[in-house]
Length: 288
Image (cartoon, rainbow, N blue to C red; front, side, top):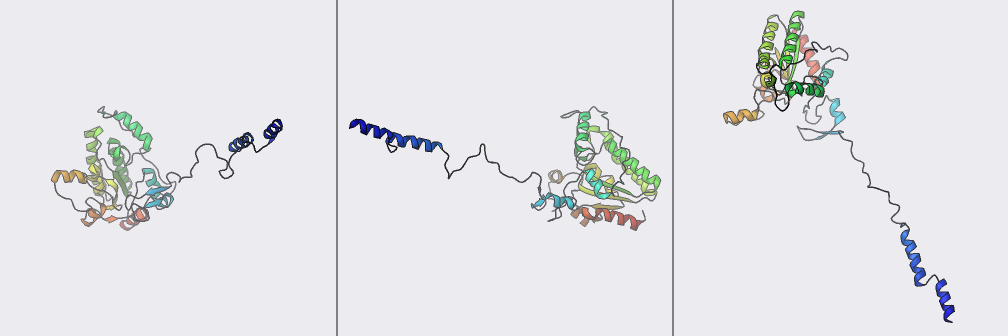
């Protein structure tokens, strides 16, 4: 009797041992409600980097392609973003018409100047980074090559009776790495402009953000017509330097193109989208 009961117990699936085995097998199977788990963390779809821009003028988030279609101008508040020299050429010249002059001139290092790195090494690294001498090249400072190329440009315009347009974007003024050789470029370029003016030439100076230091104090302010982009910073020393020196509260929007237009320093403020047509119109009106 006892042996038969024991045999039934071993074969009975409802015994404790039989129930335990089924439970263990079931626990090893994946739950139907949980589903199969994928290995590794779940990837999230993000917004591609660089698709949007934040406007420094109004703080709006702007679709990059929309801003680029407007020549890097905010569609909400007309804030003008920085553009490189290459972009500026593309905006102002018809395709295939730009011809660079005196591009083979290269700066030297007569003072063997060195700060955090030797000046000669800095020139090479900056040229590789920017491709052109623009406002991002050592803060757009004016060295001997910049002055020489501008002087040659003005002299060629004088010889060929051509209208002259110079677009300034300099945050650094004269380049300290070249000492007096850099400072003398202001006088050299200004003297060339004086000869150009005496010959009857027509000079349009366009001031962009920023136009500061020795550039603003010399040729950039000598145009027969002086145009400026909206909200451009224009002056010699920066507002904080002036305020700390004279200890006087400066007027609101001091050294902006709007302030300078109100006080007669510039002739017109022209948005970037209209700059090409307005330059052409001025040349037509003045017989350049």
